[in-house]
Length: 135
Ligand SMILES: [Fe+2]
Image (cartoon, rainbow, N blue to C red):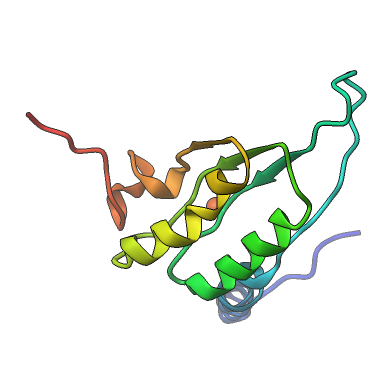
């Protein structure tokens, strides 16, 4: 079935509508979407529970929202915790308050963490904290 022919105006209008919808999704829907899944992996480790958290994106995400989600996750009483990056989105200023929220994790169980692409490096050079250590 052939695709309908669009005028240049129709093409750019549809592009703008699609881009606007994607932007609205990324700004107003996805950040508040907290996914939760429970997976059992038969490793013979006596029922150890691993909590995996990721993509906190503090600022724009409010710290009180993150704190509530962490409390909710810790109610599961994990034996180990892994945090896999994107602690921030671009830049951030409320480090002391954020440290207080994050401190709940190692207080509850051994916690391992890694940085994400938003937390620094080549990708973050456009608007965040690039890795620019110079001695
Ligand atoms: Fe992310």
